[in-house]
Image 1 (cartoon, one colour):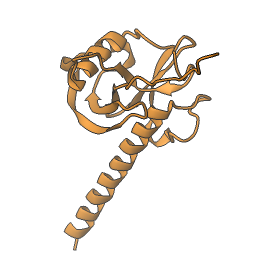
Image 2: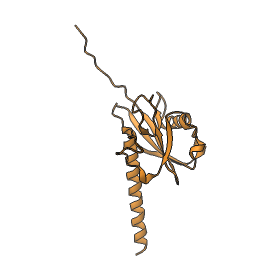
Image 3: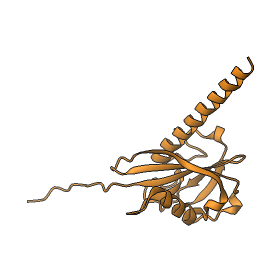
Image 4: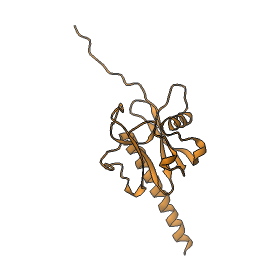
Length: 163
């Protein structure tokens, strides 16, 4: 008699960052061939939240490990989005603004990093020949939607001031 094989997902919680340079765009990470999921896909910098670690601590630990990006290198940051992960865990996306250029970072994980102009990013489509990871696409789409809504509100406020 054989015992059926069942798979149990361990809840996974992630902290990721949408890193924006005001002139250069959004910083993307091209995952390498050794990535456990989504090799050779564009993603965001960040990673797993360790046991007993809060999301804020986790994102700064990950950014320092992956980029040598520290809080002193950013001009603003905030929790921009959080939502359930399909495994039963949670995803926390931080929105970070920095003046740091690629030369200021040291790539510690992934195949490459690249600043992409916001107008060139459509998370549902490949960018420079590589698709986005599912979670990164979801985060980027929410970020872009919020940005567009904010711009529309600002434009409406400006047009009302002209009346």
